Amino acid sequence: MHPETPNPSFRFSNFIEARSNNKAGTAALRVARNLGPASVPMVIWGAAGLGKTHLLQAIGNERLRLNPAARIVYQSGDGFEADLAAALQQGAVAGFRSRYESADLLLFDDVQRLAGKVRAQAELVWLFDALLESLRSIVLAGDRSPYDMTGVAGDLKTRLNLGLSVSIEPPDLETRAAVLMQKARTWGIDLPPEVAFFLGRRIRTDLAELERALLRLAACARQPITLETAAWELRHVIALPERMITVERVQAAVADHFGIAPGDLLSNRHALPLQLAMALCLELTDHGLEEVGPRFGGRDAAAVLLACREAQTARETDARFRDDFSHLLGILAL
Ligand SMILES: Nc1ncnc2c1ncn2[C@@H]1O[C@H](COP(=O)(O)OP(=O)(O)OP(=O)(O)O)[C@@H](O)[C@H]1O
Image (cartoon, rainbow, N blue to C red; front, side, top):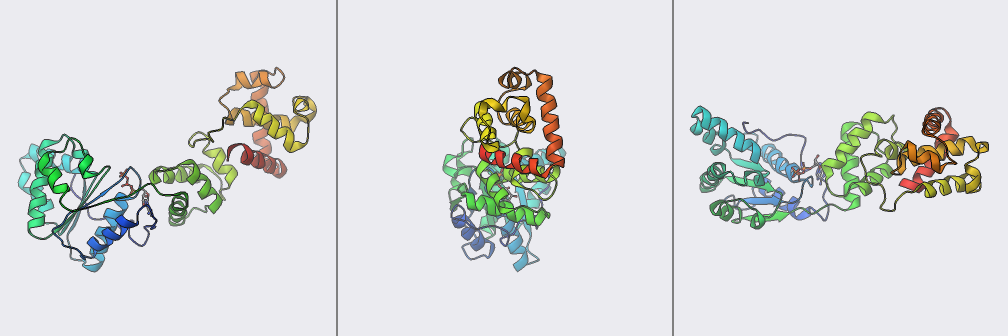
């Protein structure tokens, strides 16, 4: 896989600064603007989905903005390894080296993927020396601090430890919601802040996972996205609260909402609350059709299924029912 030029979607202007990432962000901007010694490599490290790739690409884009003629090379550990393997097979190692050696700035992502890859590591060491000797920059990203990288040979480790090493920490809730709202704007998705916060509460670290949840929601929910649609559409993806949702809790919440005694809920006199309670049980508890029915006055699986279908239709056609459903979902699952 040949190296690439920076992806213009990832810039400093759309990188949201927060306490968790501002050290890395500031250091990255300095490197991008050539404000530090070029011969010092920089390593950005942190867990998956925290913005390392975004920052690497932003550095490249900022350099290009300042100097459109600069040769910026972006490559990942896997890509580097694959590029090398192909070059070795074709007897074209010189060409391989020149693709990287000619860079003014090398952005090397997921360096940990070179663990145990002896030859690729040796090539990277060679490249490190070639670039730094001629005062060109190299910025790497990895999932852990260079000190903690395993399967990396001593000479590469020494070079990784040579320069500036900055970490990105998991973002707080507000940052997670802000990143999500910004992505939503970029993608033309109408995302209310309360839904961004709801998703941010459920998916706590990996921002890429949070974005996937948003895309999934946008693909299957009708616009506008609401708390109700978010909780519903993502019910199998996102973690429900630690408090277990039991059949009894659902029944109590539904009875309370409609002002009826929990015992009365099970009678046929309250058809809508009953359907709603069964539908909520099926979705929010760990029980299947066969188990929910008996807890509702000995009903069978077919009766539960029918109730759920009716509840689904009512949600689509009856605004009042939809509000009741949304309110109860809020109490139980949000
Ligand atoms: N501070 C931020 N501001 C705006 N977007 C962000 C920020 N941090 C992360 N993102 C976005 O979150 C997503 C995941 O980030 P990124 O791919 O950079 O993570 P990563 O740390 O490189 O993960 P991995 O180790 O899995 O490659 C990207 O779409 C990125 O644009």
